[in-house]
Image (cartoon, rainbow, N blue to C red; front, side):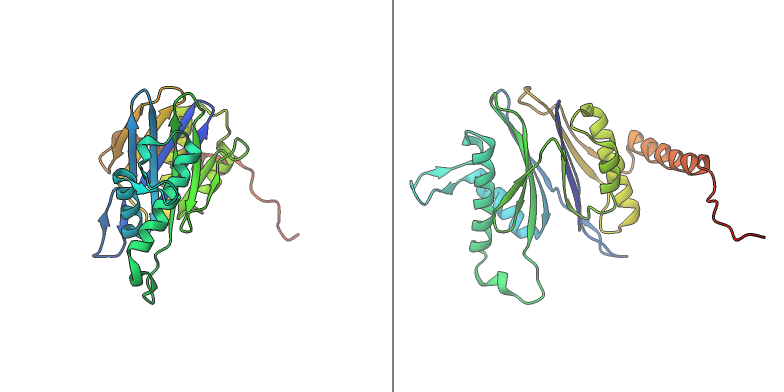
Length: 248
């Protein structure tokens, strides 16, 4: 019950996540799914999570408190990672360890403990990177050929990203397109909803340029929704009608 997307463009990284955890006529709750890890001048990293909340929350706590390295015995924290690849491996280990700590609970019938995480950011002078991390702790990396990753209810917002996002998209345009993708998902799926958490990190800045929450009273997001709906109506009206008619 979520939708999160990460967009990696030449100018930096955009992360967007909804906050809905339950959906129903009388059962709606919210939970922050976008976590920031920042030490200005050294690193800026963010995690967006989808799936079992107890697993993802446990993994985030482990990343802050530290995991023991089984080979060296040292305690490793996300804030101490020397590269984004090493940090992504640590996030994967934290997910696996969180599952291990839950013991026999993970074998309960009818309960899913699967998770998916988007992990992105920049450490030092290296380029920004974006990964998708799975329950098993393995990961795939975003590339300039397909400069975005999604988790959760991604099918409604994917066509917009496919048509509009390239690696050379300006970073605030990437944020705007990501918000349109989120709005399209909210309109089509009850399990995704406001508020939305967003983060924008410009390459080389090593700090968040934007970290904000968008709720139903946000004037820009309301205007974006209305303008996008109007633009779609105008676009389909401008296309000639189909010529497929039976001859008279």
